[in-house]
Image (cartoon, rainbow, N blue to C red; front, top):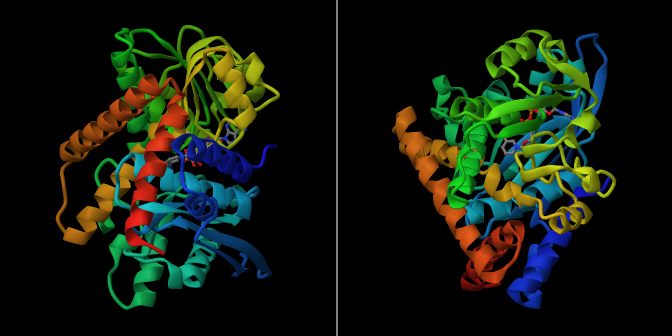
Length: 411
Ligand code: NAD
């Protein structure tokens, strides 16, 4: 598999060159400001002590505290976390949110662990990284295999260590303890707004456009739900257990129930079962990769038949694959714009926590819609003006904003 850190650095190098960035800024922004690796001893339910390895990478705090999710997965490693933290810097900058980029993770197999084991691991991890996080330093959020309950443990552990109720240390919390309306659905909501913005710009109707979604977790599930309500037809869905396809459409509400109950999309009845690789290569109007990095790579990119790819996952397309897709005239809406709904509502949550003043679901939704539309228009305008890809346009906007902060702040 392609190394996501190399993918992230290559993307940066290309956009930095196009922007004519000074050498010192290239060197500065090519690496994270700080990375931390921690050992996490956890007493397992059977009495054994298991030592997990956890990471936190803070790529850039030039525009504000670093911000980014915490991932629990058996493939988590330092390079992945560094890449994800760099993408967070660009994402916050492209949305013009006053945060930098961070990311964390623990190498573990959460599906094989009990809730008690995950709670103890989370609390120990947070106590290890407590010295570098905080509402004005670095603010975690959910990512793969972490959820509002995990964020509640993060908030509670940090509040106990810091000696006071500190909801602003983490976002994606449950509503009862300082979460924001709309945060849980925000990434999917942002994907939906982005796709609508794209077709509005193209002056095309969205009615009955086909969608295939890889990954049916937080990002994939809510994307499917909002798109289906708008008249899109969700024809294919996959998760880590397999893939299902029905050209007439999959009933998203039913599928969510099946997935919640059985933990697998494969138990949905009214669809053909196919392989997770095959589903990516089917003909479709829109393909939404919403799982992990590098799922579209030099091996399968030439077989992709989608007209549009909207990146819900971070880094789902490798550098080589990007080039192949461009040659095939497949439009890619990049992750740092497409999935920015999550961090945008995380920002709203942090603002609400800071003010102890909470907004309605409607207020959150209107603000998110406006933010996504503004960022989209900005990116498409520069892409068309300079005849570059949406990814390069988004990266150039982001890099320009971060480097402006660097020049002003000085060394
Ligand atoms: P999640 O844990 O809720 O869901 C991940 C899904 O991907 C699961 O359904 C899993 O079964 C599936 N999956 C894993 N490997 C797969 C494979 N090989 N083929 C098909 N499906 C596979 O995670 P999430 O929060 O939805 O995150 C998914 C992606 O979206 C990640 O790249 C994450 O960084 C990105 N993202 C998430 C958020 C957020 O707010 N949660 C925000 C921005 C970006």
